[in-house]
Image (cartoon, rainbow over all chains, first blue to last red; front, side, top):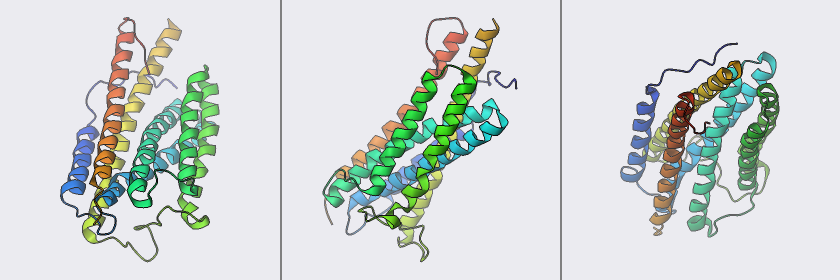
Amino acid sequence: MTDTAAPPRRLDPIVPVAVVAVVAAYTRAIWFTPPERVQGFAQKILYVHAPAAWVAFLAFGLTALAGAAWLFLKDPRLDRFAESSAEVGVVFTTAVLVTGPLWGRPIWGTWWTWDARLTLTLFLWFIYVGYLVLRGVIPGREARARAAAVLGILGALLIPFIHLSVYLFRTLHPMPVVARPEGPTMPPVMLKTFFLAFFAFTLLYVALVRARLALAAERDALEDAATEA
Amino acid sequence: MPDNAGYYHVAYAATLVLYTGYALSLVWRRRALARRRAGRPGSGA
């Protein structure tokens, strides 16, 4: 498939929309959402921590799906999407791993504990960092895509375990406060901030993946041109 | 209410730096590719 023509270099319209949404989420969380009475201001870390975790799961889930689709269709666009989504997912997982301890220190009294959810999230980060390293060391495009697809699928198998770890294991990590059968336990003013942050960071994911995809398409076009020359 | 605002300030600042830094890395890498395309030395993605 000849699909590696360099895309036009102009600002993706989703970028300003995502930036406005993220600024709105931070602004509302900082200035227009009250702190929680028991946890204090540290509770506001939830508005950047939980959406980052959601986006990381989304990113790696889509990496796995794109990888699985590539194994059947061999369409290079699927491989580029998997690569882009994995890289952005690593950025969001890094945000999870940075903000989690910043909440844990004032609330639990420790930066880190080898609790099931924390440990599995760290493993997930290592797997997808490994995924990106693997892509960098395999020279052939098809061999690289195949190995990455397999690792991307295997890595995503951790996601349901991480999500269910608070039910499956004795864990310090809080139980869900929104996605629960009895309904959210948060006051509406906090819930609105929470949903705005989820929306904003999901938009940011889309904007970053589209930018990373354009980069990958341009790189492949350059490699193709060098091969043909 | 506990006095722990510093942790949330650091968390918000850290995420902003992380996301902005990654977005800038995409811009830089794209510029590096453009330089390579133009035939000047540099590195790509």
